[in-house]
Amino acid sequence: MKAALIIVSALSLLAGQAYADGKAVYDASCATCHKDGVAGAPKFGDKDGWAVRIKTGNAALVGSVLKGKGAMPAKGGNASLSDADVKAAVEYMVKASK
Ligand code: HEC
Image (cartoon, rainbow, N blue to C red; front, side, top):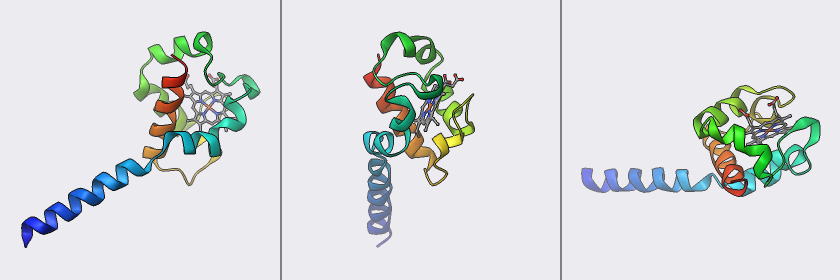
């Protein structure tokens, strides 16, 4: 009985993590600025624009998005995003811009 409970909670944990879809978050909340480089935002897929930022590491980049940086509001202005959503979007953007 206990084991079944543990399996069920492990599965829902996995499902929860898989839910944060980086592309979907990017398309809905980040592309507004990052697609065309609005307000000095590093453009999606621009290797030169991203190189210096990528060097700081994903954790630092996620931190910038959670707190906001320069013209970028915290969580890109979408307060309903979870930390996992933000992390997934950053990973998606970084992967496409390397
Ligand atoms: C209102 C426009 C805007 C939106 C929306 C926006 N950004 Fe940004 N973003 C910026 C700007 C401008 C910068 C450059 C900030 C600076 O370096 O001064 C930036 C920088 C970044 C950086 C680099 C941070 C660093 O430490 O160098 C990351 C990563 C990032 N954005 C991810 C995201 C993600 C993920 C989202 C969606 C959840 C998002 N942005 C939404 C404008 C935006």
